[in-house]
Length: 220
Ligand code: C5J
Image 1 (cartoon, rainbow, N blue to C red):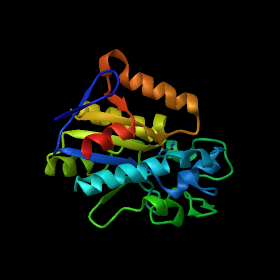
Image 2: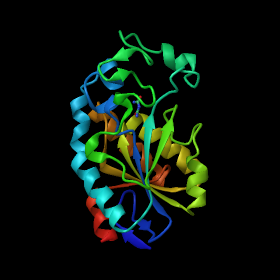
Image 3: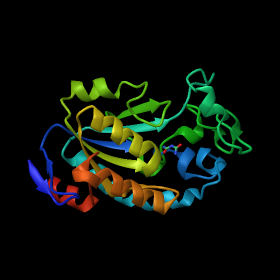
């Protein structure tokens, strides 16, 4: 174990049994014409974390530690999209409609692809997920168990939606979760800040937060 500076106190990073989780760095959320854009967000804001994520990916790859990418998306017939999610919001474009990058939030469409700068390498798992949390209706739990993972380094977008939901799901399942402050982003800076604070409140009720450089230093 390597203790690394974190909040609310040091996080013990193991040499094995740790995985990097990269949540929903897909064109749907980062580029014009996708789901994030359809909901009225400034999608350019999320690009700030791309260089940091590239560094984290390189550090995990160098140590041959497991990496899991997720993408939020639905089957083409939308059979895995609850009506509540389908009908939510008052935008012009809804899930399944044809947007600027194919059908919005549908698996396999151009907009559903991970941005090229963060493209998964062969051997890295990409988990399609119909919900906000990466454990809901996916095989993530069994894959983590197979690999003996106990510690999760969590990154991606958006901090207060899919990232936070996944971290809460993981925490309830007993994982030691570390959220990387400069490798997660939100369309709303105040929501990001609030999420970081609520995760590490009450002695780390959901887990820890730290900066990417602390993890990279510990791994190198
Ligand atoms: C959202 C996500 N915000 N990846 N998805 O709908 O956070």
